[in-house]
Image: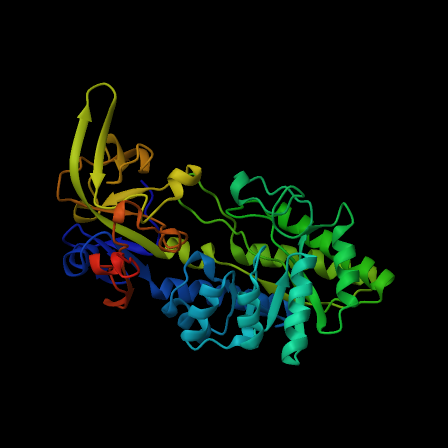
Amino acid sequence: MFIPKNLSVNEKNHLVIGGCDTVDLAKEYGTPLYVMDEEHIRTAMRAYKNSLNSFYSGNGLILYASKALSTMYMYKIASEEGLGADVVSGGELYTALKSGFDSEKIYFHGNNKTYDELEFAIGENVGRIVADNARELDIVNEICEKKGKTAKVLFRIKPGVDAHTHEFISTGQIDSKFGVAIENGEAFEIVKYAKSLKNLEIAGLHCHIGSQIFSLEPFKLAAKIMIEFAEKIKNELGVEISELNLGGGFGIKYIESDTPPEYEKYIEEVSKVIKTECAERNIKMPFILMEPGRSLVGDAGITLYTAGTVKDIKNVRKYVSVDGGMGDNPRYILYGAEYDAAIANRANETADEVVTICGKCCESGDIIIKDAKMPKINSGDIVAVMSTGAYNYSMASNYNRLCRPAMVFVKNGKASLKVKRETYEDLIKNDIL
């Protein structure tokens, strides 16, 4: 049973996060409940910033990849810590702006941005648009012409690197819906085309090779390929790339066997590649951007559930049903994601039986953890699932008309409600008879 280092157990044998007793949190705010350790998030943000300052002499910016967890309070934390933000939709952009986030430090991604989204982004003076395709360049150029503006663009490049991760979260290879590939020439052609559009300013290149990656080698290879491409653009188009966005994808520890590298080590090793390649190719050192998301919030979060029905099918499987499931965490049903868990109200008990923790949705695949080794779980126990800070709330749904959970941030023994629990009234507010 894996318990993250930022959690502890108190004298009542209760699980503690951010100085708060999780059993008390469940009583006060109800379950299911997302709980985020604010200090853990801020510490991770500072570690990235300090590493960037150390290995790139401050010539860069960390962008919070907010698709991992997009709430107004998360943008507030990122802003206070001096980060920029990566957004992928009009909704994320709107949330960031409503939180007071500086639009100049927002980078707008997406493989199919709509006209309305791009018009909104340009109207709000978003810092960079990460262009995915030539059609998008035409739309941006048209909107800018109407508004009398110039948009700074980066290009989403597929470097052709296999990151050895799940196919649904691999994005750097040629067979991906994102961006343009180097190997078939389309990346070069889109930069050449952008140069002809008078309302665009070419700012740089972007790549992202996938998510939940544990190896340093794919990142180093991608960096090398991107500098080689920057050299080609400089030599053949006369365009000097001023920014290089290396994306994110850094893995976290979900279960005991996961072995993510230290993020500082990643930044150091990739910086060596970039510095060497730039020097050898006579390329000006670009402004470096990185987009951590999961690695900032993933292991900072837990989800608390109340156990309900316990169904022991002799010689087959023992099911423990909780009061949430795929509605608040769809990652298992989407791609078999693995988690670990503890009994929050009996945190130090020995794990001596194997159970499958399942949700309450009308789907056989509504599983949170299959074959989890746990202490004996009784109805009414509080089950804490670890490392749920990323891609749980942000991917949550109202399937079966379930209300999405509340979210609290904890720090120094105090909890603060930052996302209210949905009500039945919320479920029907857009319905029309």
